[in-house]
Amino acid sequence: MKDIYIILLSVLIGAVGQVAFKYGAARIPDTGSLTDKVIAAWPIIAGLAIYAVSTLLWIYALRTVELSYAYPLISLGYVLVFIASYFLFHEAIGPLRLGGLVLILSGIFLVARS
Image (cartoon, rainbow, N blue to C red; front, side, top):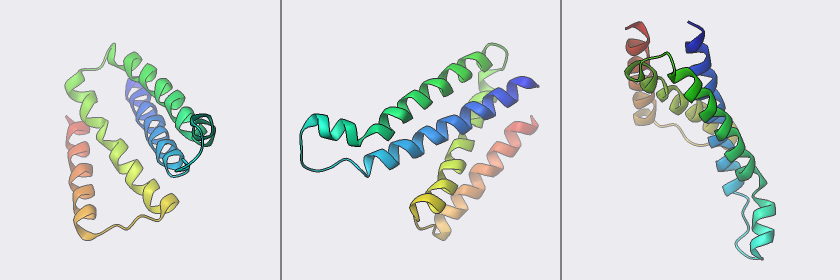
């Protein structure tokens, strides 16, 4: 049972990494030296470090959890990034995207119940 919490923590941390990638990518200047671009893109570097932690947790959880059970739970990351995109980046959410989100949540629910 604790492995499910490790999987969920891994997914949450991975979603934070994705948000850091987006935040950093939006701030890379079009001009300037490579050094200037790397410095401006510190959130991308932080996102890579965050992603590394997520990966280590994922590997730890896979020691005892069936991959066919664990892997679909990664879809929860899509949901978290979807929500973060709306609130942090003010991205539009249309009815088709919302419908897709409902389908993803339905799939996660079914897998979690199995």
